[in-house]
Image (cartoon, rainbow, N blue to C red; front, top):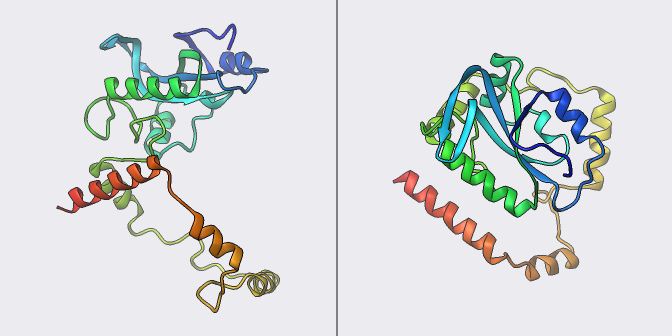
Length: 214
């Protein structure tokens, strides 16, 4: 990312102009941080220092840092409440692996709000890991869904849509209704092997569930 300023506070329009024409290759990742303009001051987290309170850390390419909607409902609410946020590019011109490492370090150092360790709206620890919200966050998400009806409740399909569905399911029968796997499918299943990394993640996930149940 030649010419991409680091640790400089920019508004979304300035960032959009800078991102135009940037090539999408293996060393064009960057770490961006959302700051709350309502909370100026000296915010120090070890060697990481900011002039406004940080509330989200992310890794991205191209226009990722200015597409803030749809990450998680806590972040969406925060941005809606703030209005105009500050986006800062903390580090650029990174290989993806290095970007993941820096993202994890920043999140760990600044701290997630759902774990009561800091102000960040991140619901994961960064890197390649999947979602790992805290128990409190899971409870809040569960409470938010309670009492809500499915989006299609009370809606009726048109006859045209019903006919299209009949045709589709005639050509693609359900596995529960007499579906017979092909030899090719069976062979693929027999030869499938999980990688050591996948096995490790599955094992950790299983152990975590057992601990939570205890």
